[in-house]
Length: 227
Image (cartoon, rainbow, N blue to C red; front, top):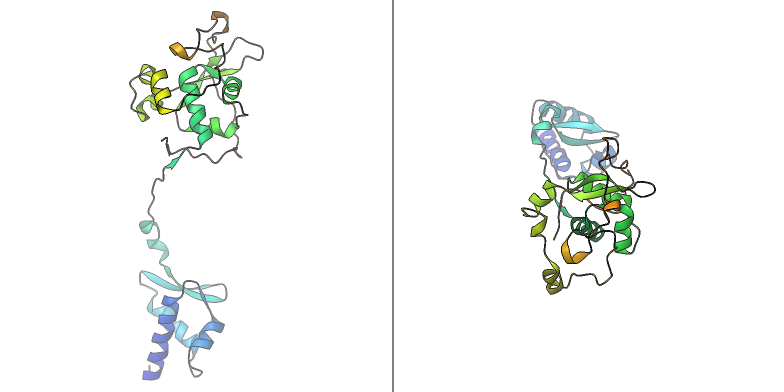
């Protein structure tokens, strides 16, 4: 290979390395000298990099350096990304924690707004809530409660370790709206439930959650930190 061809080859190699996207033949023609034999240069570079960690490959009508296929898997890095729950999910989790066992409708009554199915799905998939049975009311709605995973994640030994009324008032987090009167398992947070309203032991099919909504309804993510 002549000295001129070597310069052309180096220039083409540098052009391909510096480009953030595949380089079309038209761009090569514009950037290299008129006397450069571009097809021959591409063939030379292709052969040179054939057994290297990167290969020169054709991408449509352009050319680019790409990681050798057999090495790609070894360069893959997987990271677990944690993101915060949405405000709706945090509120829902708090309501379930303090008023369990509680139905979806009762959660909506306390919050004062409709509850997206996606919110419950996120908390269920995170392993922080689970079905607890069914309420002895028309329709027999599923009741929900927290799990041991919820206690472990928030550093609680039991539900008795949840912040009390005074703690919530001091933090300015207490909702002044009255809680529904059929719940009440946390002392001052509500009266004791009517025995006739307590959930009945459910058969296996009773405690299964509703099918998850693939569309969700809120931009909640499972791997989360609740601040």
